[in-house]
Image (cartoon, rainbow, N blue to C red; front, side, top):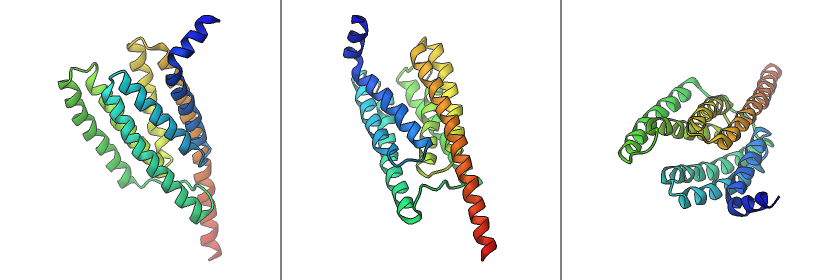
Amino acid sequence: MSWILNYVTANWLEIAGTVTAVVGIWLTTRRSMLCWPIVLASDIIYLIVFYRAQLLSDALLQGFFLVFTFYGWWHWWRGVREEGEVRVVPLAMRNMALGLVAGAVGSFVLGELAKRAHAALPYLDSTLASYSLVAGWWGARKHTANWWLWIVVDVVYIGEYLYKDLKTTAALYAGLVVLAVMGLRDWRRAENAHEVEWAGEGISD
């Protein structure tokens, strides 16, 4: 048992980041406003973890996630104040296309920077980071499509981490895929319920 205590003592911050990330994502699948302070804590913890490990690109990514977290918290709160709940919003095809194009452009730009810094798998890492930002933005905007994108990104992350022999991290991302599938299921149900409600309001008018 001593080795477990030693591991927890040496890695308590990373463990805290993992726990808060999983809890925050689970609360997001439930469309609970409590998700945002938990996700914020996870963002800050991982920012510190990555900075200490000198994984500066990952630390920078956490910086972007911090911005999205504050925006999402505010955007969801405004929706709850106006509508009484967190309502899922359909993603227009035009905005979906813009998001995917932005992800591709970001992948190339970040990939070039990572390549010059002699990073391992620069374009793959950059593509995953770029589309993670797109998925984060869609989640903040309450679009169900964010879960589809997270499933794809996290599945690829599993393969990347297995390739890098990071089996524990790969297992974590397998869990994140399960959470993303749960989020997709629950948000689609909510979206369908809202569509029925809107149709009913249209008929009553």
